[in-house]
Each structure stands twice: as C-alpha cells, then as structure tokens.
Amino acid sequence: MSIAKNPWKVLASRVVYENPWILVREDSVIHPSGQSGIYGVVHYKHRALGVIPIDAEGYIYLVGQYRYPLEAYSWEIPEGGGKLTEDPIKEIQRELLEETGLSARYWQLILRMHLSNSVSDEEALVYLAWELSGGEARPDPSEALQVKRLPLSEAIEMVHRGEITDSLSVAGLLRVECLLHRKALTLPPHAAP
Image (tube, rainbow, N blue to C red):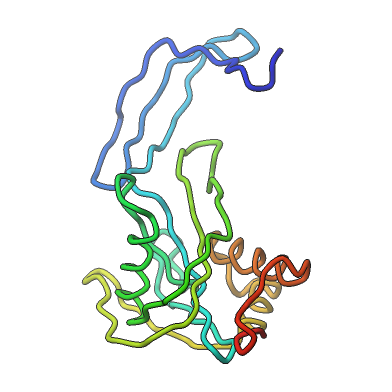
C-alpha cells in the first residue's frame, strides 16, 4: 500500500455541531481494515497562531489568562485564531498588538504543526518577532490578561519544569531552544539570551 494513498472510504458525513469557531462532523467510514465504523472530526474555522516576541535585551513576553476548558490559569506566548482566508502574518500581528500592545519590525516563521491530528484539522503557525515597539494593549472583551516580561531562557525553563503546558507555547519555545542550540537561528546580537 502506498504511504500517500488514503486507505479510508467515506460513506456519509453529517454535521453534528457548529458555532463560529468550529464545526464537528461525524463520518460513516470503511476503516483501512475493511470494517465499517464512524469517525468524528473537528474542523477549525481559524488557524492557531502564536508569536514569541523578543526584545533587544533578550526578554520575551508571555500572556497569562484563565483557560475555561482547563479550569486553570495558563502562561502562554501571545496567540490567537487567524482567519483561514487572511494572511497569517497580519493576523498574528493583530493578536500581538491586542494582547500586549507590542508591534514588531521583523517576523520569522519558526514552526508549523497540527495540534491534534487524530480528531481535528487545526493548523498552527508560530513566529519569532523582534525589534519591538510598545503601545496600548486592547484585549478582546472576553479576555482578562496579564502580560509578563522575562528572559527567554527563563521561559524555556518554565517549559522544562512543566509550568507552561500550552501546546503552541511549549512547541514554539522548544523550537527556539533547538534552533539556538543548533546555531540555526540568528537573533540580533543584542537580543541573544
């Protein structure tokens, strides 16, 4: 069997739930084994976007907020949903400004991933941003946010200690750590941690 060939056969599909952010469908399928069954898929109407904004002194900015599904407080890189029809860089620039009041002159995509590909089609992009300038944060009315400035190395240690568990944040910060270790990422000299 070809690795790239789809071994699944869809017999029928129905929407079981929809809101402005997600669509949940249930498919009647024939499994690769030949047996019939069902498969639930969550379609995301937005792309997950995150950014690690790093300033001239090697500090980054995290956003803290209470996450309703987890019933827990979470420290994360600035992130949000971007429309699939829009330029992701413009969408994450908007999110960074809304959540932190920051804007950045330079942007670099450092990571593309799928967050839970066994049940959803959600794509995520994480950027590194530098040459920051400050402004006024304008969070969404549903958000009660705190912004924390800390050294990049300390944020990476928070991941290693299990204090940051958000998937975009963990993956993005570990990606930066890996790129720096492999000398595959060049930060501006005054921003290197």
